[in-house]
Amino acid sequence: MTKMVPVPSRGIIPERDVDKRPILETHHLGIDFGGLTAVDDISLTIGRTEISGLIGPNGAGKTTVFNMLTNVYQPTRGTILLDGKPTAGKTTAQVNRMGIARTFQNIRLFSNMSVLDNVKVGLHNEIKENLFASVTHAFGYVKAERKARERALELLDFFSMADMADAEAGSLPYGAQRRLEIVRALATNPGIILLDEPAAGMNPSETAELMENIRRIRDTFGIAVLLIEHDMSLVMNLCEGICVLDHGKVIAKGSPDEIKQNPAVIEAYLGKKKEAE
Amino acid sequence: MAFLTNLINGLSLGSVYAIIALGYTMVYGIAKMLNFAHGDVIMVGAYIAYITMSSLGLPSFVAIIFAMIVCTVLGIVIERLAYKPLRQATSLAVLITAIGVSYFLQNAALLIFGSAPVSFRSVVKIPALKLFGGELIVTGESMVTVIACIIIMIALTIFTKKSKMGKAMRAVSEDKGAAELMGINVNVTISATFAIGSALAAIAGVLLCSAYPVLMPTTGSMPGIKAFTAAVFGGIGSIPGAMVGGLLLGVIETFSKFYISTELSDAIVFAVLIIVLLVKPTGILGKKISEKV
Image 1 (cartoon, chains in turn blue, green):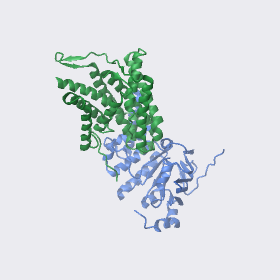
Image 2 (cartoon, each protein chain N blue to C red):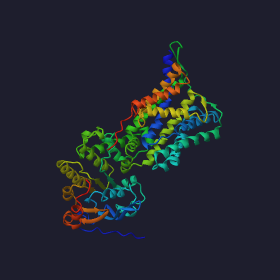
Image 3 (cartoon, each protein chain N blue to C red):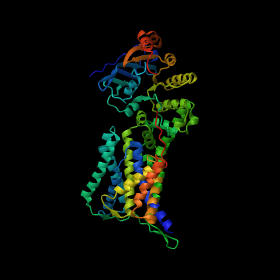
Image 4 (cartoon, rainbow over the protein chains, first blue to last red):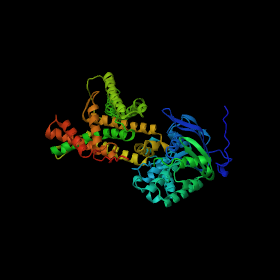
């Protein structure tokens, strides 16, 4: 059977990624919950070093898309290709190892563990160790542990958090917890990182810092970022490609400028002012 | 002197409870279920050790290792066959299944080994320590049990704090979903938890039957329930809690047997549990659980 390799369309994929295989593709992705179609016909293509945004009114199905991308939910229809490989039938942990990591809308750190240990859990795949070695504290294990510690501190330092390494994650201030979630996700060495409302609850200066950090992540690690966000100035300033979801369907795709002009988007946002929240 | 003798006996009995309680508490902490078959794994461990020593005539350390291997495998198999298919089911369904597994093990033992109690030969060869001119006797079993408990405690604490698998266990215990999204294989982590808990149960079984040498298919159930009590007492899910709970329970039981009444000792033990839970519902070292709003 020959597989169709879709050609990335210009305009959504940044120029530098156009001739490369996209890191993430979805084709007609959809999911039903008990006969109700929650999300339908989502086709996305994300370049290897693209920062893209998934926006839409509340309840549009954005987090559901994230859950399908990470196989927390099994899609009812459609396919997901991560770095060209289908993720169907894989477990969440396997999909993570294939190169997709995420943060959560509501912070889900391991709050009773230290900041350093949270990152080390993220590094889990990188440390080769078995149960026997960890019990006997074999030489190789100690070495791997030291390497993991170094790497974890390096990552924390990238976000100026190295001095908090020994603090309990749950005791950190809100902004630092949000950053730690990103560090922990980055520790799994992903090709694409999904950020679920990373700016939620942040003040303008924290948001500005977050935007700077997201750009740095892309530039330093050379990975793609897909984010869900309600802060339109962040989305419009940061994202190179935007996909707008409403009622579980894609209503627009394109560059920030195209999205701003799109009548369907304007209607989805302004025509429904009375939504909850 | 009677006080000291009882204290030592209590600590020794409590150490056995603590080792068993560790199995309960680890499984509860990570898989969020009460494995009521844990007590019967102790009995299986003791029988395996008994057969290895009496029927095969092998030395006691081989018996202990063999018992640990069999129980580890048994623990993993029980989890795979009985509990894993119920991972998404209600906790009540899992609880009933655990009770079912417990009865299954007891009755399987009844079929294989018969109902007649066998007398277990102690694995401890160390002579008793006579102190204060023979007034205070510390048996070899007591010493070995307490030392084993301390070693296990330290090893387990280092394991969960430092090792990769230990970190994975703590991560799964805090947030299974987030742990999975960090690439942790939750099934392997839960299997490892059962494996460790069951290996500890084998050690507890051998130590228990060395101190109280009557072995029959129901041997594990009462210590199992008491160790579960100890785990709740100390704060279920907490490893140091299991240690504190087990030791306290053993001491309270021994003292109430000596000073109050042998018949009432169990009632007193459970009454203390009820009082502790009324005052501190999460147990002595249990973490306060604040519901997310």
